[in-house]
Image (tube, rainbow, N blue to C red; front, side, top):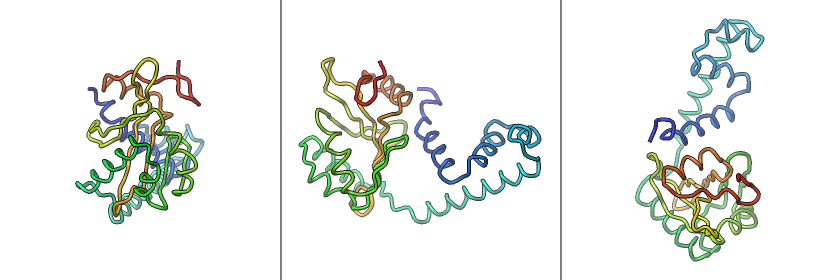
Length: 211
């Protein structure tokens, strides 16, 4: 397993944090300076700004990210204990029984359902009417520790046998699932995971077709 594969989840989540908390220009300047190691004068020429302004944007970007990191560490309610595992296992049991009511009982009223990139639901009602029922028919799922991250592997029953349909990640707080993230549309990430787990990737799954 190469270093790039090992950090696939972390890289994607880090970029999402940048885009969510910084302006486009701050993201650009921060990446150019801290990741690609360009000098301020070079960046200023690229973004049509001044060297001083570049230093200012990078400073504000770093400060904003430090504030975000401190807040999340202080207020995070994610439970990484055995209790977290028990809730996820109960969810998977209900998943296999196609018991939508039990799945909903295990989710918070204010659950954040995120299908990266772009699609989101913000309540139990939205999830019940939208993604939940569509996402369980003809599927099997199990927990997997993938690259140090506890995820759910979702397999689809197809004419060619079981194929990797989706990879999901859940956060639990106070006995309820508060955040459910799906990588359904992330072709490159799912391709890498399929190769790692030696499971065929489902390339045709409406509304996408990767054939």
